[in-house]
Amino acid sequence: MRFLSLKVLAILVSGSSLFVSAADADTDTDATDDAADTSITIDSRSLDDIYAAAQLEKGTLRVAWGGDVASSATFISSAFTTKFPNITLDLKVDVSKYHDSFIDRTYQSTNGTDSGVDVAVLQTLHDFTRWKRENRLLRYKAAAFGDIYPQFVDADGAYTGVYMFSFGNVVYEPLKINASDVPTTYPAFLTSDWLNKITLTYPNDDDAILYLFSLIITKYGWGFMSDLLKVQPLWIRGTASPSLVMAENTTDNTRIVSFASSSAFAKGVAVKDIEDVHMMWPQTASIFSTTTMPESAKLFMNYLLSDDWQKIMTASGIATRKTYDKLGVFNLTNVDPTGYGRFMADRASVERWRFQFESILGTSQGLDPIDLQF
Ligand SMILES: *[C@@H]1O[C@H](CO)[C@@H](O)[C@H](O)[C@H]1NC(C)=O
Ligand SMILES: *[C@@H]1O[C@H](CO)[C@@H](O)[C@H](O)[C@H]1NC(C)=O
Ligand SMILES: *[C@@H]1O[C@H](CO)[C@@H](O)[C@H](O)[C@H]1NC(C)=O
Ligand SMILES: *[C@@H]1O[C@H](CO)[C@@H](O)[C@H](O)[C@H]1NC(C)=O
Ligand SMILES: *[C@@H]1O[C@H](CO)[C@@H](O)[C@H](O)[C@H]1NC(C)=O
Image (cartoon, rainbow, N blue to C red):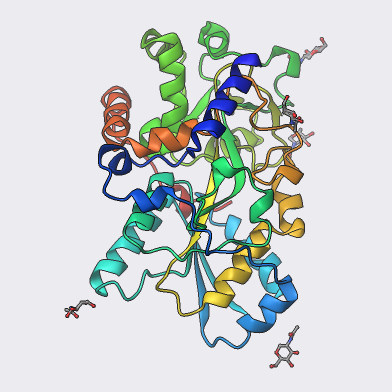
């Protein structure tokens, strides 16, 4: 705890955020990036006022929503359009690594006049520093901006951490295993008790899972990986998929546990906190400066950070907004909420890790999780 507090203090003192971009670190050509743009004031308008302004815009608000379960679009889309029925929303779910590709491709093929979407909400944190450097992000501070930990926002308002996600906690099928028998450290999964029982997301298919595995291997060494293979995990695509596999309620389903999965979307699974290294990150949102729907985009941004939506998204007790961060993300043991941002910024290291796992597990096989029907 003491160690963590000192680390938090160091971050605050140095004024750095988690969004370290490799290019920023190498060159000093963009000094203005680091100085807070005080000309961007926090938008103090109410949601109603922004809604009124947004209704004067004609068109469709396009949102890239990072995720790997298609139905996750339903929750946010219906919540937003129920509250703001006069805004036409086109929200698409895809994995962040494909959303960013589409955004860049559209930007390039329109000579910088369109980004394909107006708002992006993604886990690829390295994109935000790059897009900012390329002057592609609208500087904007939503009403709740001042309530968010400074480590999770850009001081100029180019991007904002909207809520925390985490991987590493153990998801299990409570009908088939008692909570007290669920391991709370990774090495505890390496005994023959767990043969054919574990399901994991390919680390080489998702950078958040890759970061989790990099933490595990850094702590336990590559021997962990060879021992893990001996208990024959099922490797699948999608971070919700392991939970969905274990939720399949058939007697011949031996897969009952995962330490690399979210529990969202799967009915009947339970979660036990890991007492070992794990990861969490601020899912981050930006408005593109190419938008022709700036007020609608601001409305969406404010809605994500509004009390209504934050209450739904912070049920696990962790949040980028201090008000909803009941557990205190910087007070938790075994996790550094800024670590993933640094990991993602170093693309050469990310690639080395990815190919380490790919050379062991092979390329990820199976349906794109977005095409799975749940
Ligand atoms: C939605 O638009 C209609 C038609 O312009 C208008 O009458 C109505 O008041 C608007 N609804 C809200 C909630 O602002
Ligand atoms: C692209 O935009 C630049 C700057 O706005 C302009 O000079 C150039 O002519 C444009 N190119 C095309 C192919 O439209
Ligand atoms: C759970 O614990 C109870 C009580 O010790 C035991 O009877 C039961 O068999 C256990 N269930 C499983 C799935 O291990
Ligand atoms: C799974 O099957 C068992 C036995 O048929 C039943 O009691 C239980 O409610 C089912 N669980 C879910 C999540 O459907
Ligand atoms: C986290 O720790 C700090 C310093 O000890 C404390 O002031 C703060 O209230 C804690 N946050 C939460 C949410 O528990």
